[in-house]
Image (cartoon, rainbow, N blue to C red; front, top):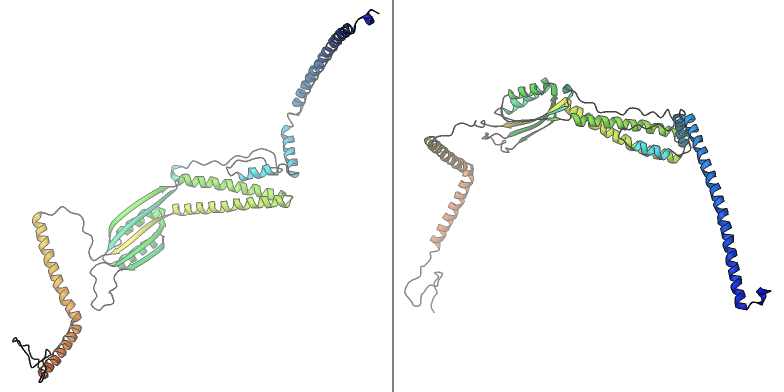
Length: 383
């Protein structure tokens, strides 16, 4: 009764106050209940984690011995279903010599990688090269001696060229004033007889004017190439096995493309290694034979002033005599033509003289006035 007897604003205030008190009591009850539920859930989660940890330790201890077998079996299953195919192709592309577990062949044990063998002192890969120039007074004889020396040591002539710089050999009066023949040879001789061959060249009948030698050690490059070939052979073998196990056309095309690349690289590497073996087994001698009429003078002590003056007189007189001889020889060469020209000039002169006799020419007179003859010497006649 008291509530209904209150005025409207007072009643609203009471209702609002009662509502706030009710909400606070209800909220306190809910929070208390929520805290209890949260505590229960936390205890349950902790209990589950403890049980899971114990189970994991027990499972790990019982399955540790079978881990390698299960891994290999899983790898084989992945290959059969195509899951591990891309990974196997990635491994096959690397040519660094690293071995990985085959995708379904044997166990996952990695084979040993090929290692570069440290060369012994007696197993050095050395390439010998020599450049030599020989002057000779008897070109054919020296050239024959060189070829005999090549046969004696068991060598071969890879290339040979002979040139003659004189083009007047067809004249009857031809004689050589200087050497004109030059021969260039590239000779390969067994490295074991390299020094013996050079000794034979020194006595081939000429004078050695230039000789230079070079020795290149290719041991490291040779060993690197050998390891590279072993790596490519390993890749080729693995790719062949993968080709046999490929089940789809796409897999076969992919493996075949990579196999072609590896085989191409392998052939190139083997060819390069074979060239190295040839260079080591056979040394190279680049020989030049020059024909001369006089050997190049060996350097000697400087001449004195008197000797230089005497040599100058001798050389000048020799040059003067050679010039006179050249003039005489030249006149002899042009004598027929010269006689013909002189004969023609003589005929022209005689004809001209007869013509002047028959047609005399009147000279101009110095006096001024009318002349009975014109400028050409003809009579004018009466004016």
